[in-house]
Amino acid sequence: MEINLQSTKIELIQWLTTIDNASVLQKIIEIRKKENKDWWDSISEDERESINEGIKDADSGRLKSNSEARAIYEKWL
Image 1 (cartoon, rainbow, N blue to C red):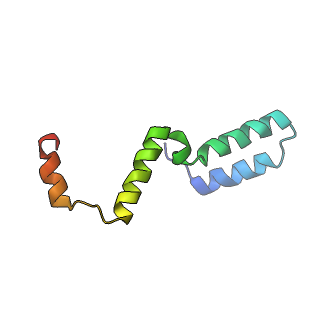
Image 2: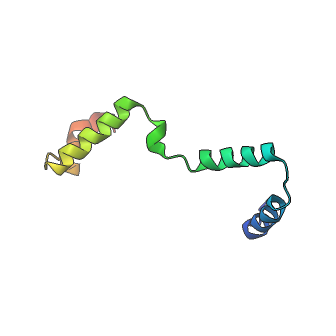
């Protein structure tokens, strides 16, 4: 079943304008916040540190070419 996104959006907007229940609106706001959540906030501190180390390495020119990386990790690819 394919949904017409534009029609669905318009229906939701119309419905939102009629809501008088604060708890329903709060639930909708919570859904929106979850949808807009940055993936950075959902990863562990160790993962963030690892990413930052990789960025520092790249900024300092400590990089391996694709062919070098493939040769190193070929047994797992």
